[in-house]
Length: 201
Image 1: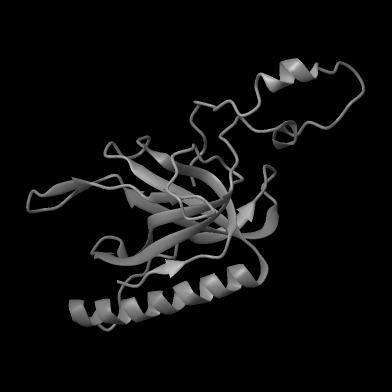
Image 2 (image 1 turned 30 degrees about the vertical axis):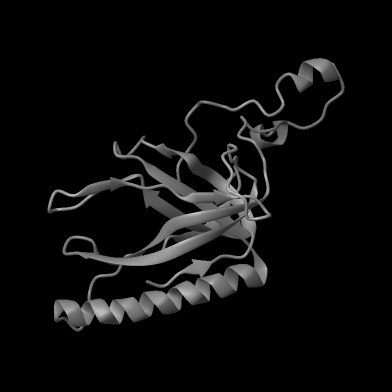
């Protein structure tokens, strides 16, 4: 199976340490990688080439000249106001529990590495600078058609940001004259993980 390694980009809504069970009771690891400029264009072109190659193979396998298509999991990144940022988001995911039709099952998770290639277990938050190793996996169903999942296999963290509830600007707040907290009080909450559920891609 083809394996690709992405350029470095910023993680958005990463679920890399523990699987998200909000929409799948078996759990799913996932992350959106935000890239821009040439990095985004080159990765998009590479995935589109894989998509077309696998689409042709699937048409042959199904004995049809053409199949209904599902788009690649790629979209323009938007800010909190719905405005495009100029970045492109690539969506990667991996089932935490795989169950086959013949009754077999196994658990899996992405391997996590630091910048030096050492295994790591620290919580990875949004905004972390990462690279992703992925296996683009083709699939086909009669109802949905043909698609390509970007299967998440490994992540290298080049710059770690701990999970948090976001900073003031993410809520639309600007600096104003008035009350200012002490450094000691603010330090108590730096790096504290937010346990609330965030919006999924």
